[in-house]
Image (cartoon, rainbow, N blue to C red; front, side, top):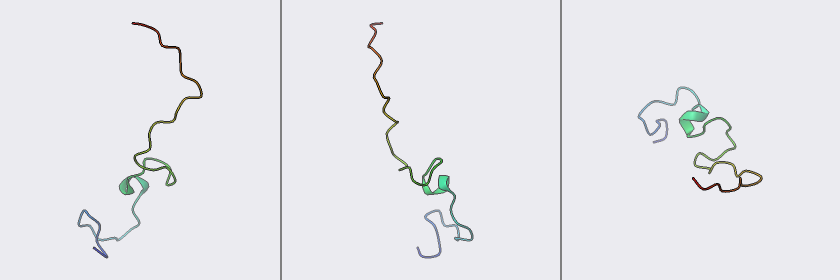
Length: 46
């Protein structure tokens, strides 16, 4: 798989961030957990 991607398409153009597995930023890991809030809201019983 030198000149072909895993999908069998020739690398005619650079993959976009979404095609590489990124959502928006190329520096954010694709499987990163959601950002942790600065403080947890008090747990309110339903």
